[in-house]
View 1 (cartoon, rainbow, N blue to C red):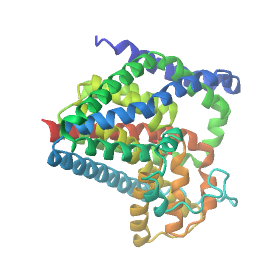
View 2: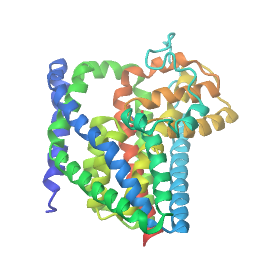
View 3: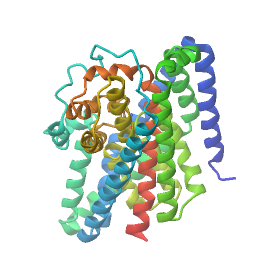
View 4: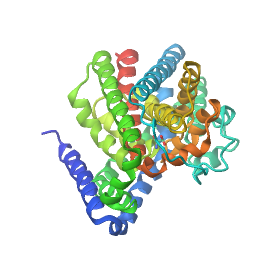
Length: 400
Ligand code: ASP
């Protein structure tokens, strides 16, 4: 038995126990919410120092400019291809199943979660790349700004020759230290994940309420879940064909996948995703570049979900979406997924971009709210899986 298999089993059992307790004990499980938050905070605490150290040491250790360009180019190409496949898959499935057709009740108010965010658009996405104060960016966990700064820092570091050596050594060491802390935190994952899942399910009213919620939008949920499951296998095929890794890799990554389900946040899961990938033997240079960037911009699950959700809203309101409209949805859903932060329910907000582009009412988001906490967990799991597969595919192409 692999040395850490017991931990994986413990995490899986904890997740199932969490569903069971949340389902049957309902609201009383919110009593353990603080335990889940404690685990989440411990993970979040490591994110900024880990990302800064990993990105700088990863990029600077590659050194050679042409190799760096190849790594950057191929990573972006991978993100772009897999995200596009996800949106396309979503569009095909939602056109076949038509989950919104015949729905009689539609929402008439703009939900709180998105109210006042009507201005969300492409310019905001581009502006989110650079923060004027890097300390503030770090303090507010604006990961993309921190990553862009770290990339620039690392590239500059490679140009100053010998004098850069102590700085690189420092970040190398810091990276190792952070990974060590993540390993320690991971031992608390079973308790943390149990608490997160049971409290969330309990808070939403337990099993009985869950059935009631899905009664109206069950077909929509099923469409998203079928799409996400199929995309999981698309990625698996890409993984097996391109990097010749299989079962062992999935088993190793499962700890991160269950954590993604438990936290609904790619960013909070990132430290574990990196640790699991390193444990699987993926080249550290690929892990340090592909995963941090992926956690913030590569979101296959979110992209697929946005396409399905927007088409569902159109169908529910009886608004016809022509082929041209669907091309617009295809493009904007891809961009909305890139723009979504790796935090819970971020996809709901960036969906405004897609809705506005095809002239659909923002009130439609109200239809999705009740079950979004659950679908968020499902899509976050696929987001993290997409990044994980990316790290090994890029490793195979760039470093082997
Ligand atoms: N919660 C998702 C993530 O962290 C983003 C989203 O789709 O809302 O990956």
